Amino acid sequence: MSSDPWGRVDETGTVYVRTADGEQVVGSWQAGTPEEALAYFERKYEGLVVEIGLLERRVRTTDLSAKDAQIAIDHLRQQVDEHHAVGDLEALKKRLDALVSAVESRREERRAAKARQSDEAREAKEKLVVEAEELAASEQWRAAGERLRALVDTWKGLPRLDRKTDDELWHRFSHARSAFSKRRKAHFATLDAQREEARKAKEKLVAEAESLSGSTDWGTTAARYRELMQDWKAAGRAQREHEDDLWNRFRGAQDVFFQARTEVFAERDAEQQENLTRKEELAAEAEKLLPVTDLKAARAAFRGINERWEAIGHVPRDARPKIEGRMHAVERAIQDAEETEWRRTNPEARARAAGLTGQLQDAVDKLQKQIDAARTAGNTAKADKLGRELEGRKALLDQALKGLEEFGG
Image (cartoon, rainbow, N blue to C red; front, side):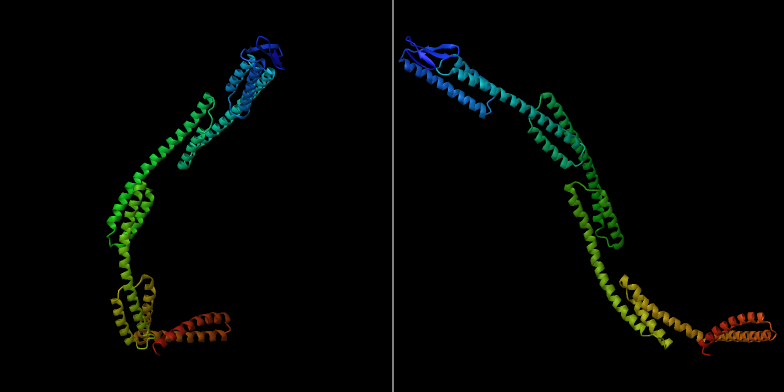
């Protein structure tokens, strides 16, 4: 018979293991010595130790599910309970019991983690729903559309909730997206209709602009082009594929007209500038007639200058007042000289002036005598009144004498 601290082999070859409940039969060994029998069943025990150790490591360091861990524990426990090994089986049972506790703790931790994850997922999805519902009312079509697509991607990356909660949140989320899509579709449908109306309106504007491009009615046509430009701006934008082409045609027609007008105006401006130079020469020639010393010669010379002036065409508008003012000044000076000469040589006017002067002189002399008589009589008030009248008559006499001097005597 052979034995060790955890087992023995009796004389019949039966192998026993010692447990807290007493000896338990492990098996029968007939093929060798008792020592070999114990060694064999001790190796089986060591195998159980290794398997339990591996399971402990898997539970501690891997994502082994609680279900799979429990199956493995039950399998090992069955082997321990069947007493087919020699060793400290109680120690193995305690390790298996500890594994059960560890698995249960892991299960609770995972349940708690899953609950937290579910709460976080629900909170995240609720935020997504709220934001989607806010975006549903937005008119920032591109930005809001891109953001909604990003929210969908975020939603897909979140864990599923319980069916009821997940379905309710998804329904709200999907409804918000649909509402936004419906509004955006309606907006762009309206925009398309407006752009089609704009295209039709601009087609008409282009047709008129092209029909006017050959006009030589510069002022009227330029004004009409300004009106067409205002109508163009008011029409709004056409579809992108039409807008640029319409604008190029519209602008091109204007360019043809304004280029032609520019060329004509440039030629006209050059001609008017030359006219201005010629008129400046005539104005300088006319100004040499002043001051007028020989009225007849000045009048004849000015008439000839004016005939040459009238034969010259227009000058630039901004220069017209100044150059015409110079000629008018000469003309007025000659007219003033003519009027002075007429007054000087008109016998009737001279006679009238001399008669008026004589009458005023008589009135002054008469008033002076009346004043002297009043003062002699001591009538100071009458003398003062007649004195004031005398001052008025003297003033008129001075004017008459100056007028008479213009007639040369």
